[in-house]
Image (cartoon, rainbow, N blue to C red; front, side, top):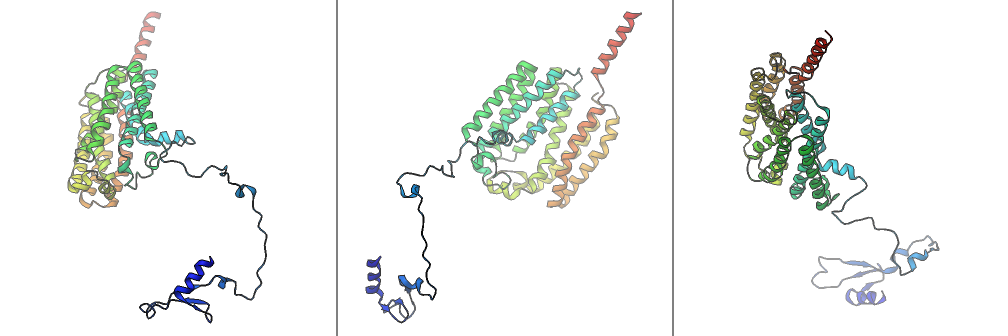
Length: 381
């Protein structure tokens, strides 16, 4: 320290009146007044300095490393404290729940007797396949999710799970789901589930950064779960199954287009090719067209011998208000109109499915029970 002070004295000179060093440089003395306080400047006060004794802990004087574990950890790493919660987020549990509910609706609407064990296996297999598809989707989109406010807190983006762990979870879920559907339900349901997994992970996910056709492909993905439920019940697909799939297909457009409208900055920043970003006019028109298509398909349900005619009357107000909100979104295209359309779409689908079920035309459970009663009466006579 003394050598440094002596060097400063030689370079800058010392002024005893101010206790500061002044740089006598010819060039800078007119513009720069560089002052460096000397070492004893801090003790120039009238108060006496208090003497304190510091007790040094022996561990700090030793040369050994501290035994306390560091607060940081490598990223990404598997956080095993909330593993179940991480799996739920990796599976997009709310989206998986919607997929399972639509497959349940397809099973319930099928014109065959309701078998509880097959129904439970269908629900479990469909849920596992959806979990696997969502995990693979998040694995592929980590660098793009990190750029979006809506997805930057996902478990793979934050490093709470390793990519290997996520893909292992996806592989186990897909194998279990396919096995449950094939051996516990039937081959047609397993084929539909596996096809949907491949379609979502290998076509829809990469297509999001290539073309706006990804929305149409994603709508096909959303239309397959009710087909799985129907196939699980009847081991076939007839006109009623395709009607339910068409309703789910059309519902995807007003739902997703309204959602993506307020997320345009995020999608644009991440490089996703969405209608709301590349062609806003088409986004609004497509949403309106498919709400009209939903009303037309609902009117066709009695003609296809799937529901009674009460379904047309009961679903008409629900569908007409859906069309009205889509028209408001088409004309105004504001954040408020898109938000109203999106929120109503979350109400529209479950209510429509309930009306579909209430007005189901063929209740095979009750018909089977009534036939058994008739046979018993004949035997007693």
